[in-house]
Length: 287
Image 1 (cartoon, rainbow, N blue to C red):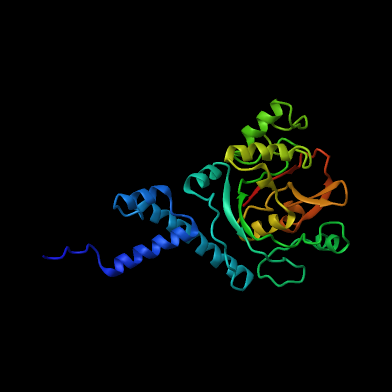
Image 2: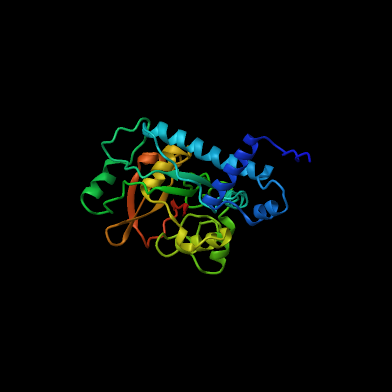
């Protein structure tokens, strides 16, 4: 009896099995793919290949960027499971884009080519114990950073350009959950207090994204600085300030980023319960 011919070469089957076991191991083998196997279909379809290529391309691009900027090999972690095409499209609607931060210290004396470091005052406050000891240390991981373009201060009437947070902020103000100053446009992200009100805005955004509220916070000063140096050329380019997550002493918060005071190098502080119409803020999503 003539033996049945096997479809595909041994190398084809070898590659298929490698993909099969790799995806079982990393948890990316889905129920739909298992169903395809049971029905004698190839589970590794074209859309999956596109997704895998996107993930690999993002990791490769980020690895190259960070290794070049830090002058040494930087290993980039695998993407979080949440980073699906659908979820990233949802995040992009709020100008939130993936960035990876390595566990690197942006030390005052560390030589980093073409890097605009925080001002000397920032490092003095670390030395003096006025802000956390690890304030210059980046925390390793993938994040969603806010790339919305800022605005120059205009007597409190300014708004971020095409700000996707505006509807959320406007609704919260209409509901009396956050306040504003007299000239503040209702959807403006200025004049929102960092300690009592920004967490309310961030919780609403978390709900829109299907994430936990604790995953969202304002950027730390060193994160603002690093994202501006690595990913977002618009950071520090406007006559305005941004609130940061860093506490200063007991009742103050760090802020900075004003173009006329040094841009990415500018870090200062203000009362955390003071409503300032020249200071905005940015959500940062951690995974």
